[in-house]
Image 1 (tube, rainbow, N blue to C red):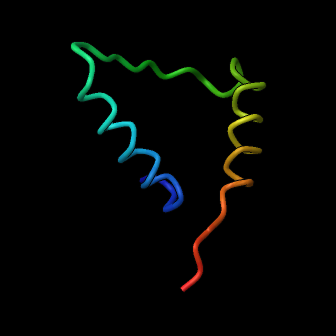
Image 2 (cartoon, rainbow, N blue to C red):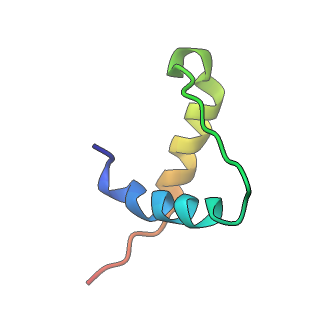
Length: 52
């Protein structure tokens, strides 16, 4: 199950994928992708969360 803050990102990815003839995703273990994982976490912390 994805964390709630990823729902919008996943929806955007699904929509963007419809513009391509072919799309593939591969899983890369976090330990072999430490720098990218760190950057994603930093970026997600910068996303403003709307308040009600």
